[in-house]
Image (cartoon, rainbow, N blue to C red; front, side, top):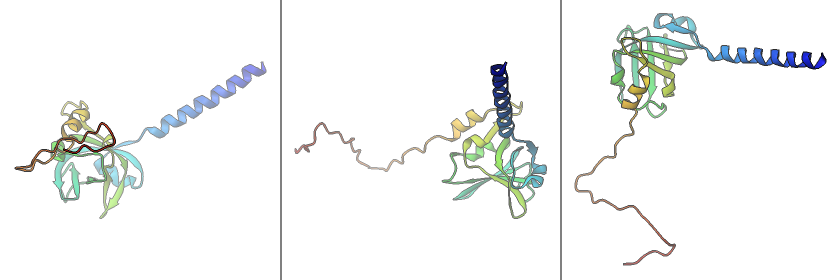
Length: 164
């Protein structure tokens, strides 16, 4: 009987712990207009990309309305995000962005630091994130210089340099 009670207690604690872990992973999904009520909280914000503005060091995705009337902005700092490529492909798409909502000039925003913070949906609500990211996250192609002489890769078979 004592062994049964011990197993029961261990299982109860394990199930409670597992349930607590599940609840902390689930984020609340809100619309862009509700974001001002959730500063400094981790949320999933949903909206449509109404405008994409690309500068030399940062890209802005204004949701639901173009700047300055946009109720929410996704900020992508170039060089500090794993999202690379043409953000213009997101224009007109419904998205979900998850992260900590911050305030910049009294407007809510989330900085996109990892590509997995972003989900993209087509007009039927089908998740097309992987298709969009595959088409936009290609590695930049090497620039070809005109009249450049190709250099063969260095290969060595021993530690003594070959002299010709």
